[in-house]
Image (cartoon, rainbow, N blue to C red; front, side, top):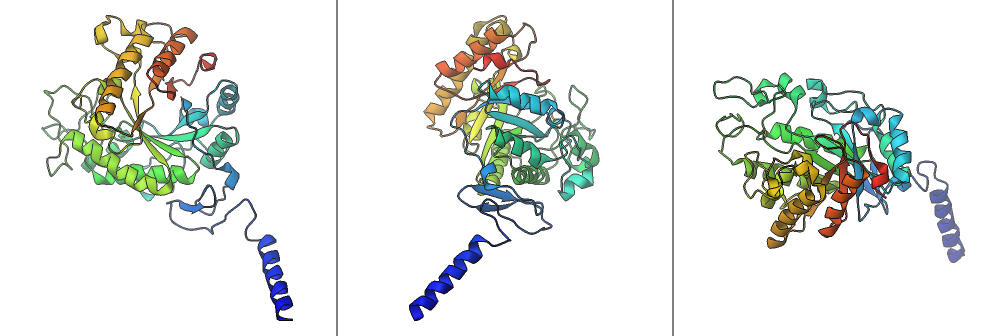
Length: 383
């Protein structure tokens, strides 16, 4: 009798688990909560739940071993163009989208719950439903990466004058575009951008790409003032410090961290005056994304008077320099170069794009991202 009673009891429990209304086989639900920090549940795959929303387990996606990605603005992601880009990507070999979550205007691409974002007015409803965007990506085999511009933040600079880069006379510094920058030494700014990254993770992004992880590029004769640098820390040490802080925070959620750098960072062993030193940054970032656009190299670079006319050679030289330095320090950090799919001094079509890709492959790399600010891409060059 006791054995029969135990059997009935366990059958009853099993039925309760199978037909429980609170949880289905593919979902994990957490009640509404006030924090904007994502709640993570590991359920055989990473499920992220934020503000009571549900993400199905099968929306989770494994990171592809090779990434072929394109950059997409927040404005594009919030329009029907996004669906068209998904369709074009599916037949082209593109398997990743780098989507603006916060761009160089300082505005977010969505309505954030972060108190600081609301305080400074950085919310913009470019994308009405951030989770819907990441879900569409994952359902179509596209790996979603969130791009976050860090220290070029005019919105924050205008609302918090105490966090702004200044000139020696106390006046606010404005770059060549007439925009102010925020102080890269400020821990308030560090936390704000990492909080945005956490919110992006909660919306389903699987990787974070930080851009403008640097100081303003100015002549060495222009000595700028960074109010938060009380300990006289070098620019390079500070940028490395930010990446250390960011990766420590974001690795808790099982995501990787990328950092965009100037292409010249691969060849210049200092920090270019902007704090981007390759050997220091690779200590903390999972991936470094050098922008090796041939059009952005000065005349005479690598011996070429017209670098933009030599897409293969410029990318090849730059990557060789960077990979040689990484090999010397036995770095585990990987390079994912940004390539040029736009025309500046010369018309770039399938031929020029493919030449850049070949330079990547010839250097033993497989992954790359394509950049076109207008999001008009040469999909025929990616197959």
